[in-house]
Image (cartoon, rainbow, N blue to C red; front, side, top):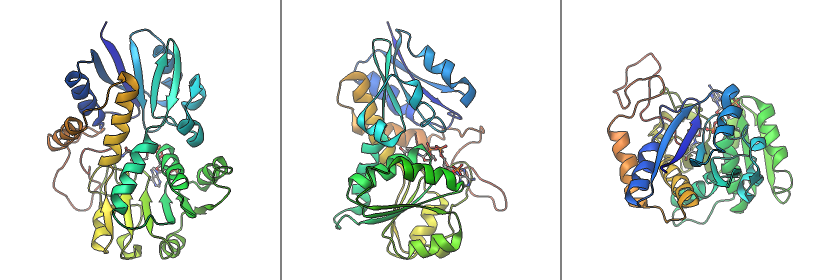
Length: 306
Ligand code: NDP
């Protein structure tokens, strides 16, 4: 029987995961299809129940469901439990196991960004959703000593800090209100800046203006495009990296969990690049990679990062 793997998100039309996962299944002789399921939050419980059927091998979970899905699974792995977020499901019979492969994916990206330098100890994280949880957990386990989380809705950042209370007991993990002047003063004290919001995903917007980004920061955007945030950070003198490497490695880890096989990384990376170059469409059906028009919101390319 051909097995099914689904990506559940809302929206998912922008996803590049399908291109790389289907190619990996075909290349490795895995008889499976990768489907995109656009499910609004109210339809999540029903979608998850369907996954218990024998034809499903597993799933990826993306924006905005990564935290919401936690109580719907039967068991969480250590990374999923620690983050309180799930991006990959596997099956044990009809039981659903929740994993978080964003954590190892983020660590590969962080290592690439830092390069040969000594691993820094201070970071500012913008955003407090499922992706931010993987980032913050990755920073904690990498030995960061001070991490400040800014979020539009402060209570969500506070919830994140509370969630990591015990694992962050040895270091300073703080939630702060989203005010440009406070962000600016924290940026002056940090080495690493990470955008884990979805600002810049569907439109050419940035979470923070380039003027407040000091030179010589290491800047990562989880979105897998050359976002305005990255362009302005680079112009300010920072070293920048987009979310493609994280996307690739979270996908590779998920592939191995579903199939028990090593992931064909080079092929998956090539398929990601092809999908981007081929103009995968955004959730609004806009073609991607269009030249900029001034004065209106723009799609910024292939869109979301998982
Ligand atoms: P969530 O929906 O869980 O969180 C979205 C975050 O973005 C929240 O912090 C939210 O703030 C913030 N946000 C959204 N819109 C605005 C806005 N207009 N103004 C201010 N803040 C805003 O999503 P995820 O955490 O799953 O994903 C976040 C981003 O990271 C997405 O772009 C996703 O594609 C990317 N990602 C990439 C990965 C990769 O492999 N490269 C892996 C995981 C995520 P609030 O809480 O206030 O609403």
